[in-house]
Amino acid sequence: MPRTKTAPRPQPPTQPAPPRPAKRADRGLTTLEWLLIVAAVAGLAALAVVLVQNVVDETAEQIAGSSARETAARVAAQAITDDTTTAHDKRQSACNRLNITYSDIGVDASYSSGTCTVLIAGERYRLAQAAVADANTKTGDGPKMTACTAANTAWGTVAVITWDSTDKVCKIAAKAG
Image 1 (cartoon, rainbow, N blue to C red):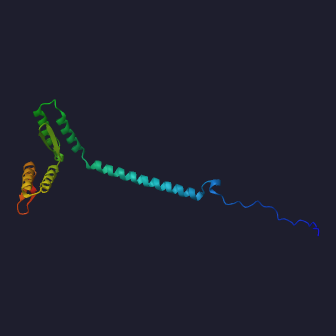
Image 2 (image 1 turned 90 degrees about the horizontal axis):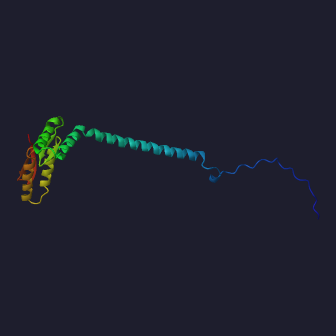
Image 3 (image 1 turned 30 degrees about the vertical axis):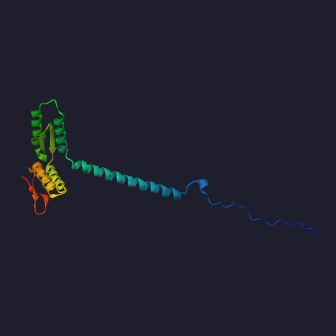
């Protein structure tokens, strides 16, 4: 049977096809992705600022902790030591004057064998403590007692260093002076 032609069915009006979801390759990053990236960068920048501030604060504390006068005393002592053109007795006199010039910070300057040495208040006592600790690391009573006697000879002006025969240790009985 032959087919007859029928009238075409009415078609609804044509509308543009709905846009398909965009792929990343089509239009780049979405607004939310950009927002997340900007927030992450801002967080890293804030962290960097905090870290730099902490480093600056610590450096400032270290600088404030060290006295400019202590540094000046040490530089002066080194200059006296390095000055080989001046006579020995004048260098010794200059070194001894550091005790007066820097008495406000407790400088203890001494001149020996062409070297001007500056110790700031408390450093001699700490060196005496280190000598006592070193003496107590020796093996055997004889070496310990010998090291204790040497510590007393070297540091007896700042600390009373004694050998405790009961406990077999070298110790500081008191600060001298």
